Length: 163
Image (cartoon, rainbow, N blue to C red; front, top):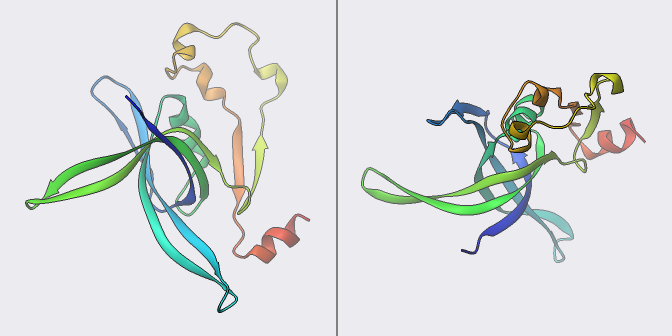
């Protein structure tokens, strides 16, 4: 089977929804919007184009990082498997664009982030447990570094506040 993998650059436009599925796995989902911007040579201005909306689902260890770091309005880069889900509402067939995320990051071209690391002595030098290597959440996986994000209101604030 061929899978379609994509990278989407956009903005988180919904609150996170965290839930547990039947097998006990946790997931976090959120919506992202990616706006097309292009330079119109006739008007010599940047103009907005179409917007792509996608539902993003995060599993395993990604649940911890996304849950701690992202919120509505944050600029993100999402990489994962793209697919279309069909469903019916009042007898009408509808589609939604979905991404099963492999990686979610903060878009540093639109914000400033600082990674807050635990002291080196806090990280264990012992081998990784098989359950953690398989992606299951363990108490050790809670030792993910923290990230603080400042999202300026304007491009000027982005370039002048940390030049």
